[in-house]
Image 1: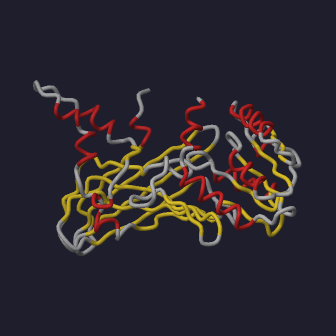
Image 2: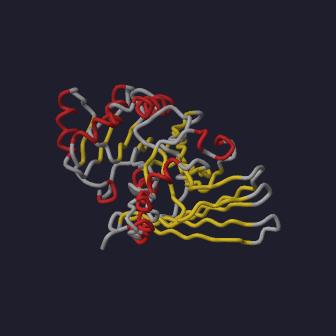
Image 3: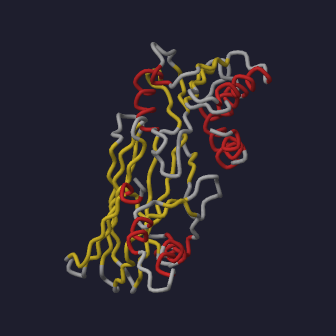
Length: 312
């Protein structure tokens, strides 16, 4: 991974200040021990050190760990120890009062934070310790403007009587990182729905399923669905990647439809998102949407799968 990616993390002051505030809220100077899992260049671990943590153990398996080691030395960070392995590979790790891990992607779980924190809670965290984040909630909303949809169906505009439908459908079986305005969402985003909550106080499954449904108050055309997350870092401190939230290096995910849903007032639209994540196989995503009449009878259903969007 190139160093420039880590520059984007350092440049994300919203992210950085939220994690700093969360650490400050739980660290007792000279007492609290901290484990920073997926440390990157070591920023969060150094924040904990500056806040007076008794000791900080940083885990980083990627090549950037060498950068973190140099930065720790440059900052004379005594009490900070870098372990160049994945935290799950560490045999008999030291237990910490606080585990912090910013292993979140645009899709919240794509960097395997679930498996990482399952292991961290079981083996790295002291009884009664604090996990940062403690919970991640995924949120979805229908997209009612054609901007991104129009971009994705460029295949239809090739002209000359050439049919590119096969490639078009592959494009629509992909998830896209996009920045959406609340005005592009149903009800300006006010009807956004929680579709999944991962509570890291207890074991979580890496196979997830989230669902939502909306009853339309007016006639609407639905072009796709926006998904984002909110992380609870510590009491009263959250970090959101949603439209309208303070801008971060993360954006929303746009899940397309094969065809827009044209629905009348009183009818319903549903959205289901399934995911499966692992270190070995990466992240698999599949989603579906249904259009139901006023009596809850299904009029049409569309299913999309990320696997269908890849060239083999």
